[in-house]
Image (cartoon, rainbow, N blue to C red; front, side, top):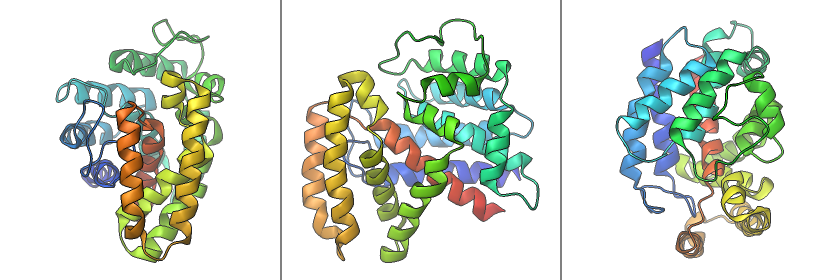
Length: 278
């Protein structure tokens, strides 16, 4: 099973970086000093270590970050690793008659202080942009469980919000947006774009907010809302690409990367693959 799970992990990461997402790194458009090749190397590096049986959520986060740092010299996938680790653990713990969404909530509820310690170590190693001091600073010894730390950060961080809500958006609106686009156009890349625009429209990207402030993040969400609605109305998504590519160039000229929105898309792809495995 770990081999099939490793393939699912790598495939989800590849699906995310293959799809064009304005402002974000993809095969169609690099940026922010990073290339799609670095993301593909990272996907390959984390798949087997994170798929190992018997690891806790915190241990998966730490092995994922360490595996990534062996192949690239930048933070390509911390958000993905943070979102994937509970999903992988929940997949292993899931009972036959249980849904993955129910299993993820149980997994999150059982996160420990040890999970927080391992995750804090991993986050400090990855050193993401905009990492500042908070009530529970990752550069200090953990004093609460990982779920408690995520709940404290949920109002300002999209990934923490996923933990605190039991991945409600990813299983709900995220999968719905992806499924509708896939049904209409038969191409997973359109599904990822639809998911990306949906999460960016509904949740101001926390990576942008950390670097440029909440007002800039909200302004980007307003533009994303326009493109989300346009994609929902059109019968020909290709017709939107020139405008989306111009927005992509504009975002990258300003150094704006909706990174946590892309991470949520990767989580949706992993959910779809894990459900298919069951």
